[in-house]
Image (tube, rainbow, N blue to C red; front, side):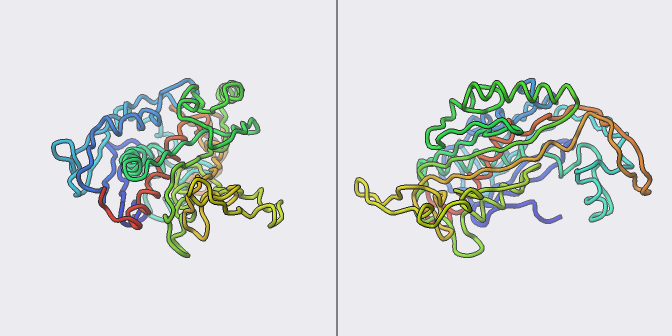
Length: 360
């Protein structure tokens, strides 16, 4: 299987399965000499882990990370960093009743057809469980970015179904996002989101929505022409996240309703720094960061696993009815927030190394 790695100079390879013994990531290209400990990584994993609130899956995984290579006496050596997390709460038997059928909107059919074999338990590599490894690697990338450029990456739940919060991205703080279990920085809207998710969860159903992200203090010059434009790299990373179905950068689709005279970001000099008066470009022009904040949004579909009876076909093509067992998210949005931040950090760290080299 190819497609398990992302990045060119800061390269991350993700490995492991949903109900396997462990999962992890190998990071190549991290600059040498950076202080790094479990304490730098674990908080991000704690924000992503299952079982953290009543509106997410109740699978109990501590996602305790171990650094098994690439760090000596608390500092990175410049060699490959290996991170592992042991799966503690596997329940493969929960999937025994679906071994011979294809669940709607899952990877069961496509994996079976492509490889001739599939991991039934939790979907194996197609499970969102594997994003834990990406979040662990993203925490390392985020530390590199902060030490090099003071970059801050903040994502939040902007909408759940038709419940939406509209805030100035520049003013959203991590503290506001973490103040409630749905990770929406508007407390009143958050309560409405939580109520909607609980209502749908009791019905055995699921919901989708949108995660927004703002990246501050990005230096000018990140990104490459044509195929490695910064927004193209971000789109690739975001659409690799399980359940993501759309990526909107800067003004996105709303920009189609504007005239060019309204949409153009005019340059000014302010305190000796060249800036733009608006930011419809989302902080990137011609594929290269222009020094303004990077803004984007990621759409997530309703979780495909429902706790309701559904109809599908089995391997023989026969129509069958089934109902899943086990523990599943009624809405992926709250746990998607740290995943979006992590994938953004991986992309920016890779482009930072391309532009500025691998020295801290």
